Length: 364
Image (cartoon, rainbow, N blue to C red; front, side, top):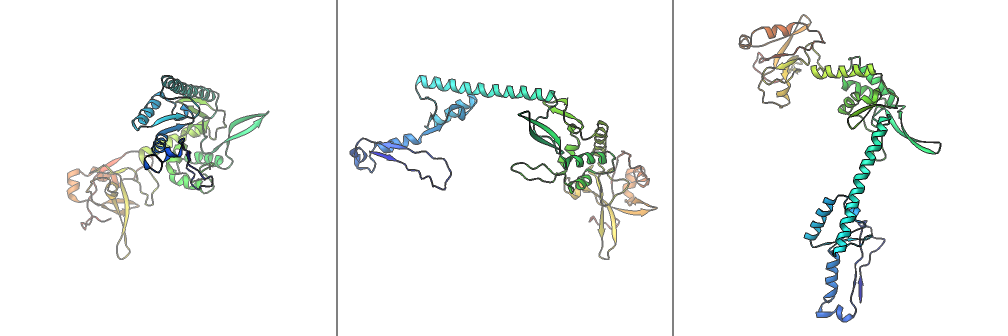
């Protein structure tokens, strides 16, 4: 007598299933002890359920250590590993075959990795691009003399935009955020893939692209640089100039602001060291008052208690109002420096302590 679990091919559940074949010789065995299935069929079912079935040993793991770890876990759970394609069992010869097949799988995996590394290194030395080319280029495949050739070509849409972005940023007249907004509208986005759509670049990705030596004709693989076969988008001089501008702006911290002033990016809080920014407050009658405030306190990044300091226009530049107690304690030189014009290219950083508003209010 047999019992076979029937699996419907029209079942909506896509989960892979296995059919368990349970059998006894007579009807009496199936009803032994007054049980609905006797004793043998439940025992067979339990034994079948305690098996881990794989197609081949190398489908389970390609590391000898991982293979041993998995088998120890199976044994602890009372299960048995079964290979559909290989005759492995708990006998000494079966265990030996299992160990040999597992070692062969590990050797194959490591040897394949070495071969891929060797081929990729040789490709990079000859100027080939390893992996996906950055934005502005396209990985293309074409047939030449009956052979498939993989190469890199300039993206007809994104390539000219990236070249223009390099040229403009080299003038140091743009911020990265403003330049990104300028080139995003005409089409400088990520390259769509088989499973993802094109998306606008974020500021961190854009800065990373501006630093990428690939655009001046170099390819990098495993820390080594080689002359690439692809066409550069920018000259070496332009690329180097862009790096200088990036380094300068990163040092000075000068960014485009809604309220520009001569000391932008160069004035710091004397209490916590955070940058001081200009904020405008409006009263109930519509009058607007500018203040210098600590961005560390405003964004709650520090425990700073520094109050806002009022700014007042005087002869086309701003003067800072500070309490007399602060001036007497700190001296007047830092505040005299604040009232002098400064060249926009100067990198001098002034650290000073801003005072409280004359009316005692800290709201900005």
